[in-house]
Length: 437
Ligand SMILES: C[S@@+](CC[C@H](N)C(=O)[O-])C[C@H]1O[C@@H](n2cnc3c(N)ncnc32)[C@H](O)[C@@H]1O
Image (tube, rainbow, N blue to C red; front, side, top):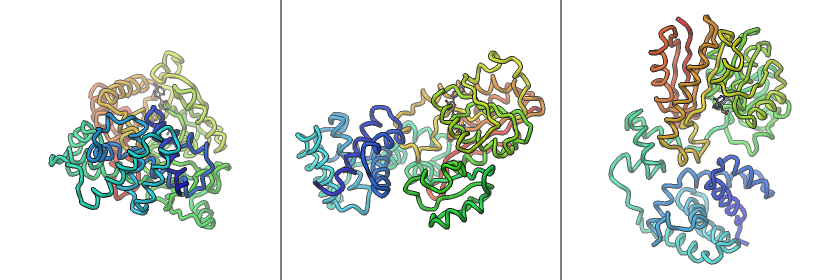
């Protein structure tokens, strides 16, 4: 058996699952359950499979360059296996070509692609010859098309980003979509404090440090083999939360005794932050329309031992109909809206392929409805924060601008858009803080 065959097989199975519509992180989890890999193997499989998903367009370009049959016409199982092989040859420095090829061909040989093992071998070997001769796929000289091919993004999306941010900024943004995402934690301040926790991590030889300007943010400076095995997980000492998302809940300045609505709450990362900031002494209502996601929220509350949150399954746009007493009831409201998630492309490699302009337009309608139907629930001296993990202005500042033009009684107190950067950790994020005039 070629060394590393099982790793390539698992990576290929992850691609098969993602192509059937499963999110990459779920696909990874499902596939890994069937094997007994050690943590180094898992890191390798994650890098390989997520890399293949990110670079799908770029790898297809190579299939079209090398094979007589264009990528769209390849049997899908073969296409994804070729991606596993090509990604190793084109994007992973440390793997000898021979190991990459033999282990990938072995996957074909030992599965129902047996009859195509020769094709896999020929295409991968031919790729190596072409790399050596610098015979690379032809890529358009048009700057936007080039970015779309080299950074592997749908052309419509690169065009959109150029419209939003200009070509210079777009180059930074699209590069950031392909970086290895960092993992940040937020310390549960109800249970421990930042310095104590970092000391504990360092004592276990885990390289971690505080994040600038965040009271409870911890940067893991090298990716752990398994996050859940870090000290303090079962005891609820921390949650995984990207640094960009950690400044959203503090914008509400949640206080003891306040009535707080978290309208799109699951899986509760920001709910638990609101609870911690209000010393587990506010009255927090965590609403979400997804029962499955609310269950995860509930288990987060239990793990972190948070008592001040009640969960409620509902469409948040119907809350007034469900309970008319909610009118002008809440001191603080968080709408962490469902969004296109473009700011999280680095950690969610598949969404770039399922997103469309039409989906974004549907989301904008929902985001507007959430704002429209939830502002009446805010007390006259209350604060509402609207946030997303996208960089699309129509879901962010332009949406808020339009909303505030209609609602003359409201004003914008603060707004911030974080753009993802290749050279800096952190997702893209947006938040606006709104109150009555
Ligand atoms: C961005 S996620 C929220 C993340 C969450 N705030 C956190 O920090 O863990 C958006 C959530 O909105 C929920 N959602 C979408 N439409 C909704 C609606 N009409 N009413 C309530 N929840 C909704 C989704 O189920 C999803 O859980």
